[in-house]
Length: 138
Image (cartoon, rainbow, N blue to C red; front, side):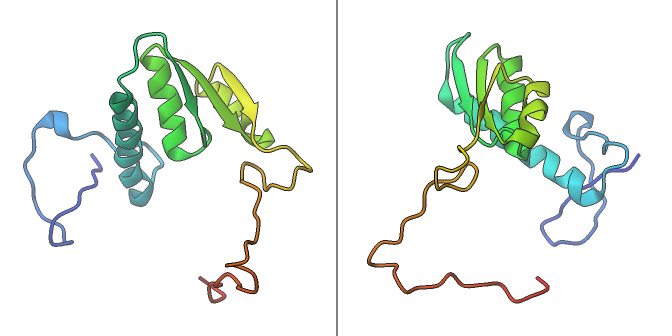
């Protein structure tokens, strides 16, 4: 069985844990991909738990096609919530497939925003400044 783990010292160690504390790495997943699964799922689970919503409540999920958003949609549906999500045109079917009841378009073409983003305005404070750029190749 392939398993992934982290240690406090960054190196591999032998570790004994209860069987219910481990899961198999999904077939075909790299170690890096497998390591992200628990964090994304737990983030979505904790967010939903913190809301303390009553059964049948409606939840809005932005970024539903992303890693955390996708888990949030699935977990909210499993909890019995109605899910309204947003998605770009290419991700709309994916968001329906993971369980959203309603998928709203993200951004409106021609309104001056990037898809899903807010309209950017340069204030006096920011005029003349340029965004730092990453060196090529990174």
